[in-house]
Length: 337
Image (cartoon, rainbow, N blue to C red):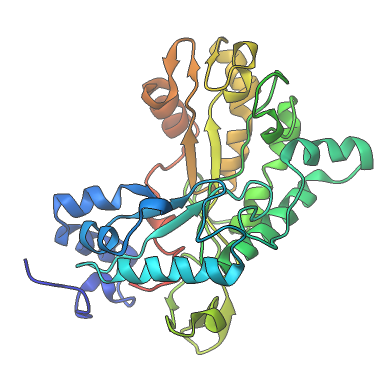
């Protein structure tokens, strides 16, 4: 098969074409192997130059505590992500990776980053200090996104919008509250990370501020620490990209399992599940959340990952979430196609 990398005549690499045409052109050029690669997310610990270049992997993920080295600085993180991104661009189609991480209370894997209290403390702050919690959550989201982008990361596997109903649950600190109304307000952290969607943004579609605009991206891999975040608009002005894609998790009922067992069984009627645990996802989708992560737990004996009713009939059809995130995520990357 002929090499395409570096061929600028392809429609999908030409920013003057509509996004839909570029996506259609790209898909028409992909082999089955490349499509599988793009749907695959691998751990940073096994991500190599050859795996990204030869397999066309779509996403790399740094799990908690895993990075370029112990107590790695922002520059070390940026260099690692840049090197992986460079390898991805050397693949046949030159598709950049989407880099993901769990920045659940600030960019907590980076030495020297701003660390915020865990969600349970943020949710409780309204009781102690009488704060306008939705504004505080939004500001925390914006600060976290800014520090994520400083390391070249585009995708945050947060927030957790579980409604923790049992303090025996080992991850109850990830829940803002046992009250679904408090959790709904704190979902404003998504707008902080992704930016506020415009009034005419279609409901249910993913949104990241700046991701839909027509951009010309200046990239210099050698001096990228200095140039990071500088994006050239068509009219020649420079603008900073400060937003990342968010992920509402874990859909749904993970905070309501019997006896607080992690990844256990939530035994509720649909009406109760909707009233308590599903409610925050309505606010997340209204804010254009880019992704929703299915829970490892089950509902009335049915594992969430295979629950057609909750994933398709409720999340997609009733709540209107558009599962295909190509328009919301592919341009989150700082590298142009």
